[in-house]
Image (cartoon, rainbow, N blue to C red; front, side, top):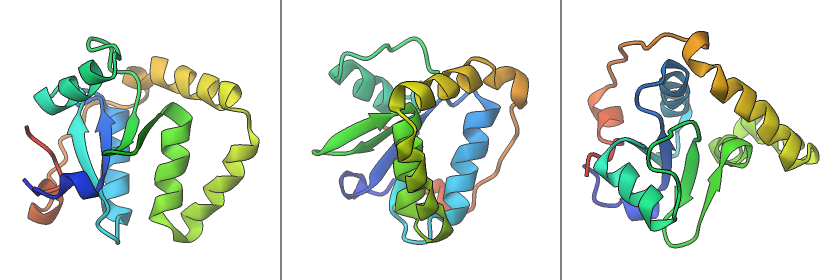
Length: 137
């Protein structure tokens, strides 16, 4: 494990969700600046993150983006920030900020509620470099 996770952005995701795993793979393939690491919400590390913030430790329908020591974002705000950090064409996602959070989070919730129907769990085999971006603690 990369011991410098505290200097990265940590993406927390539902490790049992095919849609979530698709998006983790999507981010991995575009993370040219090597700025993201990943942890499933079900992992000990994910459970600690949720517990320390008083968040639900049993329901995993929310993606979180955490910048240790600074902030964490959830749902649509997390997605927009990830896209912005990836840079390039993805910076256009900043236009999504014109949509009020209550509306973009509602769309997020509809997708989240149906995520298990949308995509089956897929067996993705990350490269050794990508595998090092997953926090196992």
